[in-house]
Every structure is written in C-alpha cells, then in structure tokens.
Picture: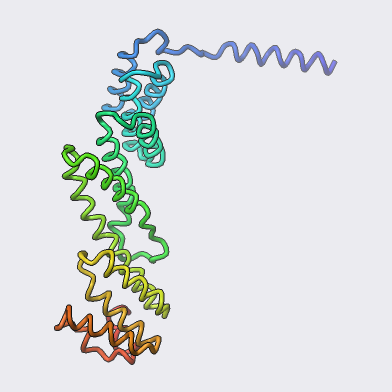
Length: 263
C-alpha cells in the first residue's frame, strides 16, 4: 500500500512538472535581436531582464563582436544595478578574454568607476565615523584601474576624467591616513602615529597635510621621550613651516598642548 502511494505521488509530481511552462521566448531569435532587446531593457532600467538576455546571448553565441559587446554591457548593467562585485568580475573577465580589444580603455575606465562610486561613503564620511570602520581599499583599487587606463591609453577619451578622479582619490587617501594618525595619537599609540604621519609626508606630500603630519611626529616622539628624533622632526617642521602654530605649543605636556589640536 505504501509503495503504491509513493508511486502515485511520483506520477502526480511528474504531471505537475509537465504543466510548467518552460517555453523560451528567445528561442529562434537572431543574435542581433537578442542584443537589441537587451540594450533596450538596459536603457529602460530593466537591469535584471537585460542581464538575462546578455547571458542568453553569450551562451548561445559565444563568439564574435556581439558576445564581446554583451560582456561589456553586462559589466555596465551590474554597475547600474548596484552590484559592484559582479560588475568588477565581468570587467575582469573581459580583460582576460580580450586583452587587445579596441574598447579595452573603456573597460578599465568602467572598472575604476565602479570602485570610485562604490567608495563614495569613504570620500564623504572621512569625519564623523570611527577610523576602524573605514576601509580605503576601494579607493586604492579605483586609483589602480584609472592609472592602468591613463598609462596604457593616454589618448583615450576617458583618460582626462580618470586623471581628475585620480587626483581626488589621492587627496582622499592622504586625508584618510591623517585620520588614522590622529586616531593613534588620541589613543596614545605613539609609534603607530609616527609611522602613519611619515607615510603621509612620503606618499601624500601634495595633499596639504604635511604640516600636521610633521607636528604629529614631533608630538609622538616627545611623548616617547625620544628627544633627538623629536628635535630633528621639529627642525624639519620649522624649516618647511616657520610660522606653524604647532611650533609654539608646549609639546611636553600633551594634555595642554597637542590634545587641543586632536582632542
């Protein structure tokens, strides 16, 4: 009896499955039609539908210019749909498959743009958020992609905008390093503060933070009782910023001096 019931259930389930409409509306479509439909869906903001069509096109017609264009459009569609990881994956796949493509500059630009916009919170929330919650990785990845573009394709129509964004990214990264240095200063991690401040001077010297960075080095070395190193750093600060307000502060008593700058 039990076996008969199981057999009957299997028949019912199979019948139910048979009633499901598995018709593929794109069956018999040309590659041109699939691409046109996908492009229209993309322009209309129907990103998921566009992605399905791009995937269908690449599966059914894996070679040729339409497949290549579909992969580029797929990366862009993921970007527009708020899926940066998938956008980067598609862009990287395109770069790997078509390293000599005439539109490779665009793919690098798109890749940099995905990271750049994914990093908007980093660029806009440098203040008011705990340092440990900020990760500048996206800014670094964006800079790297844009740098690849302007280095390999200096005459690209996207290079000028990429260079402008690189300048903003460097400024943001320098500001982030300063926030990290302040963070360590506030918590008494003097050596870590020195390392970060020195990094600002060496790597981000054109971002407008040198004066404060040198002041942090002086304050941190004095707090560590490393008088010679503190004196050397103070001389560098005085040489480059002779009118710096930091030079007038009594560094030896941090609660009454540098704390007012970073408290």
